[in-house]
Length: 109
Image (cartoon, rainbow, N blue to C red; front, top):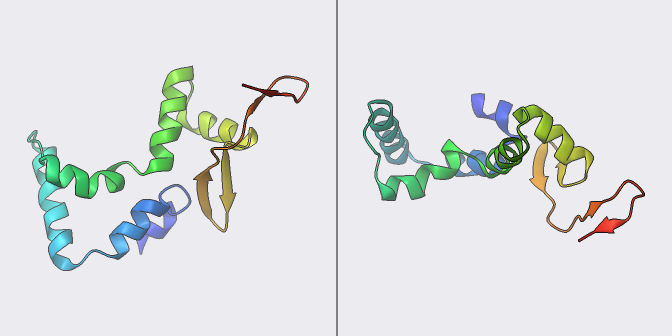
């Protein structure tokens, strides 16, 4: 239920969690417990749960925010303004084919 609030930026995680059964959810809780107590959850759990811990859109926006030393929200808005990130039907996605443009609107690169 509460996950739908984050669907815009975490669609991949939303879809993954919807497929979990009780056993997977119990393993997820165990992995979180380990991490919260300073113990690595393990490579296998990292593969299984990594996209839930850091969904792709959040991860990609964080890279830009870190690179340009700006707040996360500012990076998200700028990526959307430049056309590198699109929102459609309540879901955000990265657009790979967009080229950077100069001040005259010409494609660079």
